[in-house]
Length: 432
Picture (cartoon, rainbow, N blue to C red):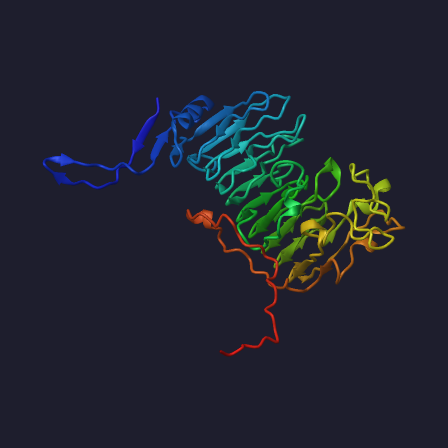
């Protein structure tokens, strides 16, 4: 049984003993239990704007081949009773990608759940997936706990814009994996740079609690645009992919700021923040504990033959690859390398006011292979492709907290963040 409560608002008028009632508010539908069948039934009854309440309990969900436990395909709120109150466990045994929840509709929200038991089998199965096009999504006040498995799965995979806030991620392979929509990311790399706008996935006010570093608090691929801010990261790193493994395009843009990162483990994390491509800003991050390095670039296509074959099908950037700019014998600028933006224009990465154990932390190269002719240092140079201790010109962070956390819809067509053309000079006003 489902309990459907509809709040009635409207205009009650008395004319000739008639009563007119306008029913304009959305419904609240309460599932009979947290079981998979009960929640599916409640979602099936809901319409856009409704809220589906899932009571407390500990329930196991299981999907079929490429099928979620529950599909949120409407602009609804799916609300559990709270973290560790409504607990959904992954009972998937093995096989194809099977997830607990898929959000495929824009303007949907999932809140108040603990998802646990995600594990890696044939793929790094996430607990929750946000499909491409499901923009203005919000996932908040949820826990993703993969600590039960030695080969954990991902917490979330997101291919849309919106906000992930006040969530807790425990020992996931990656807490949040971000993609730039459908395809490999080609379209994103043709669109304007939009730093400081709603045109990104925001991850804010979350906790990432890791007993092992795994792949990091987050990763990103395929033209992704992401903002990682005001988070607490323990025992792991923040990083994203470039034009390399998996034949994906690089991340397009990243904004990483005002995070607190700490590694108390005796096992060092190599780098706290690592970029493999694209442009953006990194500022006001406080890093403490056992990290070898604070912030580093790495670009695998400088060293294809010895970099664990992470170049995919793209080939080396060496001056003879038609994918690259080839302005000099090294191949510079390399496709999608750090410091590049729309249609491979120069757009340096800027960092400022970051610290590692109380000392200033600058961006630098991570070059474990020392390749030559060309070298990584030929491709990525300070004061050209990136700037240390320099505020990015004309950059303003997007409003915090994100409007979706206040129930407000952000602008759907943010203006590009590229500087506006300068006003013309030396003009004369001709009189009448």
